[in-house]
Image (cartoon, rainbow, N blue to C red; front, side, top):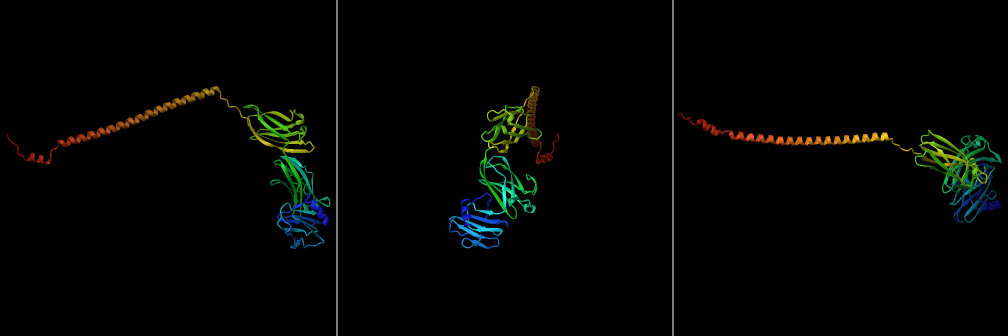
Length: 401
């Protein structure tokens, strides 16, 4: 057992290792042997393993017949024969990539995956669970099994999640073969591809390095002239990555309202390329369009690939033409409107002058009337006799001649 541990110290991580999450992991009943790899900061740290029944294992105290414990400066490697099935826990201040390696008749078999892929590429692979090298097809065993595919770079991104239920890309339900179709819509970089299948009893994981390269075919759209009724497509092939004669482009040109659709299929083997470029001209009506498509090709090393072209929008604008008759009519209409506006303006001015003149006349007339009334009152007061004068006049005797 110590010899096995020494070997594991040199080859620690295998493709089917299970990651240790939150210091916890699960061992299923079929496990014959488990190797637990724990990384820590210093040798003096004490590691405790808690078994599903609550009992504990220590580096200095454990069953010697079934447990081998190698305590290194910054790492502990523990191998357990016939481990207790159920949830386990490691009590320690851990860091780094801590993993669980199982020796189990149940294993995860992955279809061949390429190390080198391309941006926006579609990848299809098949995953099977094996027991004693035979594909497991037991419905009860596979009923809750889920297949998760993740790409881990700067962040972890789950790119697919499937079941063995005969739906989506899975061919047959409960045939033991889970099919996944991955869309690699990630920027060019190096990633860790993690494929994991699990149910309520077990977890199996496969890890694989993957490098994403830029798409080996690009394109651009160009309008020939202003107010044109055609558009030019230029496709550029990366000869270092794919065989130009193997390229087939299946694309769609669709108007914004969806009424006009035109499928464009190009087999580069039947086209004339200038170097690594293909240029074609397409007649189209004046409209807003969306171009989308996918490419099928063969790489230089013979791998068949399929990747998506980025979707782009372009517009062909119709010229605006004004007929001479319409222009003359418009000029006449504008002239008439201007004349009408001038007449309206003059009429308005006359109206306001009349209003002002009328108001002045009313004011002057009012002043004159008031003045006349006052004069009459004054004259009347001068012509009247006082009371004493009237009495005196009546009392004096009248002389008789």
